Image (cartoon, rainbow, N blue to C red):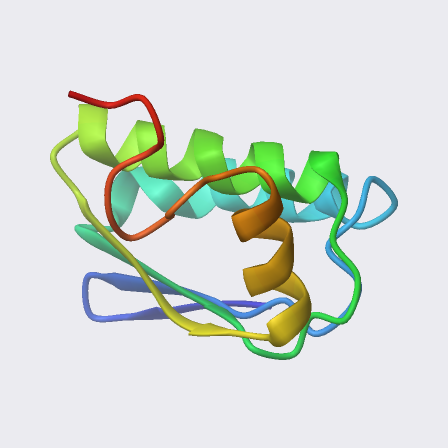
Length: 99
């Protein structure tokens, strides 16, 4: 699920991105994030996402911005893209309401 390559932390969940799976991922991220300079997230394998998964993405992005780390999503399934559109959130760009 997580892979550190040089200073890039790769996040690639292979199961549903829901309340039932994000707790373990959050623990792993808290351990690995301090040493990363970049975070690359691949959500192309996700078939289900809920607000817990969405909150983790938003929190991860915010943490990266605040600590000067590069954050990007490199892959996104249609399910995730539809979910983001539903909430009016562009994860690699600006959040709706940003100035």
